[in-house]
Image 1 (cartoon, rainbow, N blue to C red):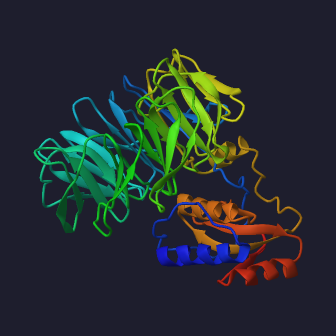
Image 2: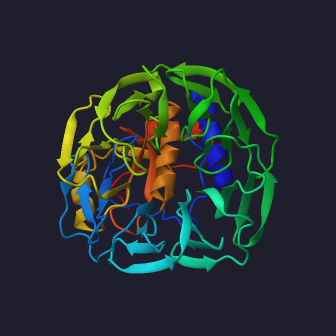
Image 3: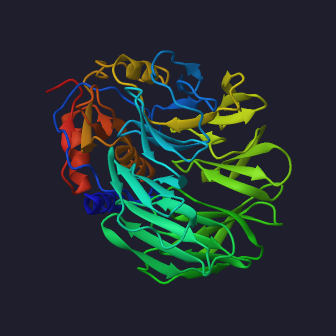
Length: 468
């Protein structure tokens, strides 16, 4: 389905005459539900999201609606011990992963509250783009967890990683620096491949793990970790300090040591193309999952810059610290920052405060598309201004191009089509057995919907919410 999706979007782009800048996508799920059901309607480019607060001193995690940070009491159950870091959340398996100070990696079931030990003596952990968890312990042994299936890898890594990344298709990428810097790529059913790497600075990786960016004194080297193409060096006038890829992987944003602002590298042209003006040099960068907002940490002061990436404009700065979890932009577009002892939610475009949770800055936060089942899912959707179930918008018709149980996959496909100039959106399921539908429209008549569908040059369905 990966080949089908890329081919389909390319065909759509040819129809509309516009180049998409959305990311490549993972393989689609094997089971899809084509049965028409009554559904709700989500915003065009953003999904409902929640914030999870993991108590640093231990206890039951707390759930908050976004963008207002209203607490949802009584939803989560079970208790976590004191944790040192949160690896992330896999929405599909409904698992949150955290590491204790003793190096014990725990899996917390968001629905049942059950806590299981995935691995012990953990030195590094990473969550891949398809939800696969990777851990490396102090003896360089690897354990992975995919859809709740734990696998102890037969071979340890050749050296202890400096950095660990998860790639698509259950593959691991490790950067090691003992003796000669190298990149290791491995999978549970394949022997590791080890390649030399010229490494003298920071490293960044695309979302799906197909490209590395390695900083040096005079520029950035783009490296395929699987050695399918030769490395490419892009010279820069100043020493790169921090790197961040766009979600699509087509742009690389580079903060430099002494120059204010950011350099921008085109990954396909393999050259510096333009820049982003900032008052001072930046030391850290973070790009949201839809590529709308870039967060930068100034070299001086305790604040966060917010950059509107499509127009490369600095919106402003807000006071806030910089940690591995925050600041961050949630899937619904809310910006969360630590301000003093509190955690604050803001609208990135206006910097208007939408919520605040007092006295929670010492805890760990994770932003996710996972939503509780049943009535609580509808409650969270209501906070986003979503149309209630059963509202069929007067019998409007849609051109359905895909349906999947994977929300992220469907959302990214809708993003590609929207950026190509089409009225694409995701219609989410009304119950757990339904799928996330990628649709175009709505259209007032069947004739108009079918005319749009025929222009796509691919299979499509005419879908009307509420009709069998």
